[in-house]
Length: 172
Figure 1 (tube, rainbow, N blue to C red):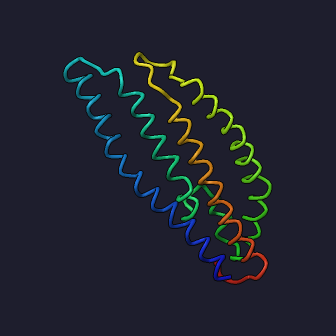
Figure 2: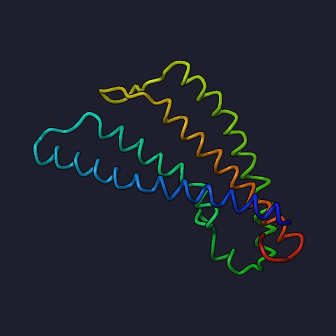
Figure 3: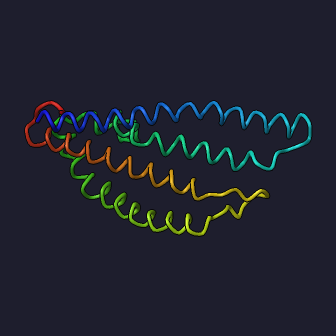
């Protein structure tokens, strides 16, 4: 049990550190958007790069924060029903939904994404939207990394919920 707690704690800590580190990119996102608004409306000189940079930055923050959000139970839940259940019932529901929805979806997505990212790197894919056509294979890579991080955190949460569902004890 000690080894399991150590592994689960390591997964949690890695995802937390990554999410908190990448959350600082929100400052760059705000500055980028502010610069664009000032240039567009203050000087009638919009940028050609701010749209692409803003969706790169926002996707990077989002993807690197999904696993941590799962860890702290920050994703959408139907609290009006869920909060009325016992800890063990919540864990059983979480196990059932993880097996029927979470794992099949994210495993299939991960498989599809690996081939897609590999193709993007081989082709040195560029965006076809916008005027400066930035490279997007790094973008597709961090989206895939974020999905894999979410899947790993999902495994950790599944193990915790399974333990509670079986024993009725505290989450490891």
